Length: 98
Image (cartoon, rainbow, N blue to C red; front, side, top):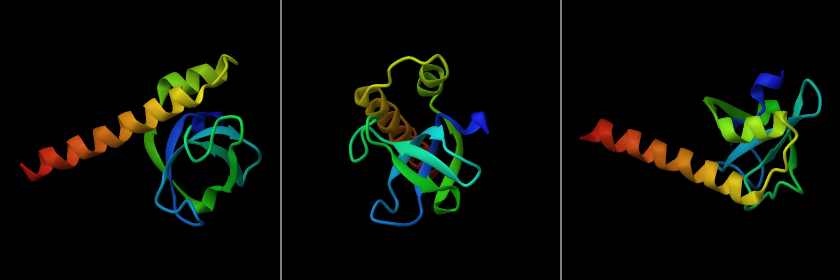
């Protein structure tokens, strides 16, 4: 279950529907804690059911390493990782169109 830490996820339900987050902890088999450094800061992550999330195959390596090495996670790091992934997605869709 540790392999999901650092994974990018899309919220499928709730007020944060269609927002991109990063899994920063696993609470049990059905729940994880997510944060994006913006709407949900690292200090106040959202507990969310896995069934309400679309887990991507991409991992924010620097975030997952920071968590696994017990380093302090900053909102800035989370925001940068989310921004990087969104830019990656838009670059992918632009290259498919062209």
